[in-house]
Every structure is written in structure tokens, then in C-alpha cells.
Image (cartoon, rainbow, N blue to C red; front, side, top):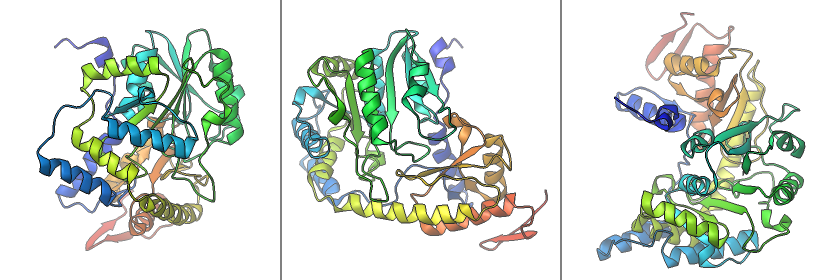
Length: 404
């Protein structure tokens, strides 16, 4: 069978594969604890459900404009005004099948073959593959000081004549690190000075802890005209626990949005009408659920960190936001894929190997589930890895005996 060069180069999504593995094991009755996913367990806003149901009940589920229905664009404009203090026009907005598609069509609109997109590492698993799909090259940037917080000098060292764009994801998946406001100010100004596109992947920007406030990138832009190369991406998946709805958006210059819309019109014809109406309900409805989710995640983070800090051999930095912790398990195994497989095989705990995010020896552990899953999952992991652990472990009525 003949497969294209790009097709051969693209790996499957490691995060989606993990979700599939969890579902298969659970269907077989396995006592799986899923600490690898990025899916809040709270219910979507009732306003989203009701609005979607009303459209379904009307039976008027039809084609929509490729860049989004007027009501959803209006909701995104209102959101941008509230959280970014920036007024934009409908022509500056495109609504997509998740923030992932918004980033993808943005890259397709700006990247030529062999041009580069730069992003800090550890990075979200899809960035390198998205660049490949455009015929471009993803360039990870590892902070020189070994932390999860990049500095401008780290980015600048990787920017060359083929660099077309920079992607900043803060708070960051997988580390949970929220980059300092001073860095955001510097990177905005740097990209303007170098005439680079800057994609701000802000999908977690309201899920932050310890009294932090969302950072407004527009505050530091000198050029807010239609010549601006600043692209701000967001969506409903994380903050509204609407992962399966698949609705995101991008705010950018009219010319770029027009090109992105043309591309999207040939890909998907735009998001589902039902999903778009649900997103309107979420964005325009009662917002208490976002703060409730944020508080739950902050509490879950505290529980997870306390357990990991008592786990000898594990090095961990306290996440500033999101629902991920990126812990260093290299004292047990520097091969994170092998370690993650061992935890799945031995005690049915699913975590994400750090190599998928560009940094081996680490595991991404999610704390968006139940506290019970967090505590029991860490105990199971400790039983596998701690040489001083008891010889036996009970998972429900199942008795496990160490054989390694």
C-alpha cells in the first residue's frame, strides 16, 4: 500500500490512545485508575445542555457559516472583551472543532514547507505533528536552566531565518507551569520586533491556582492593527468541562481569519450547529461552574503533590494551573514509556510517559478525577516502585504479589 510521506511521518495521538486503552480495559472489568487523561469529570454547564437540546428539539439542525454562527461569534467577542479587555469584530473570529483545529488551520495558513514553528518544551504532544502536517518543522526549546519556565534568551537562541511562528501554551500542558507575566510581555514584543506570528494557546488560562490571575497578552502588544500577527486561541473543552463537544476559537487579524476560514471550509465546513449552540449557552450562561471546577482542581493538586512529595525518589514541581503534574521518576527508570507500561501492566494505573512531551524520565499525572483515584493511584504506583513496599497488595478483592 502506498502512503504519503506526511502520512508515514505522523504518529497517533498518545493522549487519545491512552483514553482508548482505559476504555477497553474498563470494558473488560479491569480496575483501572486513569491518571493520564485531560478531561474534567464535572458536568458541562446546564445552559450548554439546555441550549443544545432546544436546537435539537426544533429539528432545525442545518449547515452553518464555516467560521461560526453569529451568536457564537458574539459570545467570543464578549469573552475577549471580559478577559482580554480587547474589542474585536466578527471578522476577527473563527470558531473551530476544538482549539486543536483552530491551531491547526492557523499553522496551515501561515507555514510554508520547511518553515519552522518554535515552542517551549515540555510541549503538548500535537505541536510537532501539526507542524509536520503543514510540511513544516517543529522546534522545541528546552530552558537552559532545566526548569519548566522558558526565558526569552532560550527562545531567541532557536529562532532562525526559517522561523515563522512561536507557540506559547501557558499554563502549560504537561507541566502546569504558568509563565511569568514578564516573559509574556517579552515574547509578545520579541515576535513583533522579529515579524513572527505568535500563537497564544490559552486553553487553560482560567484554571490557575494560588490567587493567580489570567495574563492578557494584548496588554503588551504595540501593534493592535490589522497587521498584527498575534493569534489567541481558546475554547470550551477545559474550563467548561466540554471536552467531547469539540469547540474552540481563534482571534486574529481579518486577513488571517479569512484564510483560515477558507481552509476550514474545505476541511469540516465548520463545527456542528448543535455544538456551537451549546458553546453559546456555556459562554453566555451562569459562570459559577468554572470557579467551582478551578477550586476542585486546586484541592486535587494539593492532594497529589502531598502524596508525591512523600514518594521517595520522585522530584516534583507544584503546578501553577491546568490539571497536570509533570513529575520526575528518572530515579526509578529513565525510560518513561517503559515505566508507564509497567505501571499499567502491574497495577492498572494509566499515566502519560514524558517522552511524548519531549522530556524522558518524567510522567504526566492528571488530577482532574476523583481524590480517591489520586490517592489510590499513587499508592499503587508506590507499591510497584518502592523496594521496601509490602510483598502483597489488594486491589478490591484481587490479590497481587510482587514478582520482580
